[in-house]
Length: 180
Ligand SMILES: [Zn+2]
Image (cartoon, rainbow, N blue to C red; front, side):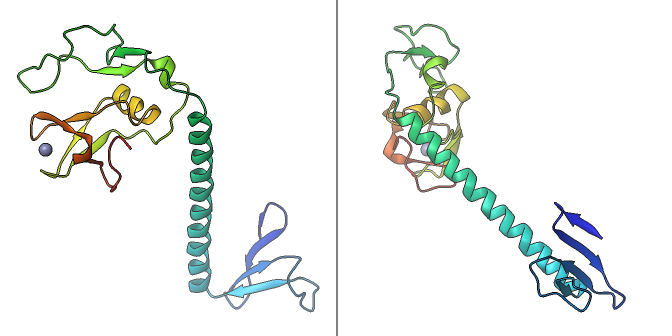
């Protein structure tokens, strides 16, 4: 017999069936409450238990994330707390374009401002709906979106090699528009 936290016992009987004992079940002639499963039923039951356990955990983690995001939303964002992605001060020439079409530098919220909490999940990859290509960005940019979804007005597409308005982009794997 294996015991689950002292109240549920799992074993087998002489008919090669799986037996679960629980004090709440209707007792047999020996005074032990139990349910009997065939091996197949026991495997199906185990799969169902695992499935439900996963669902319950996923639900609990969604609720916890929602609570964290609501708490973060109650702290106003200080948009003046800005640096470039490498942590250096914002320069006047950071919007100059490189041959790739990307800017010389990108403004993000400071690590301290980002650490006050995210109002959206941190997502690194978005899809340009027009060309259906995904582009991934660095963590500082992704965290800035998560802290302040409306911080930016446009973003870069690696395929189109240019910056375009956010309403042309969705977070990869979702229909959720970037910047909302
Ligand atoms: Zn594109």
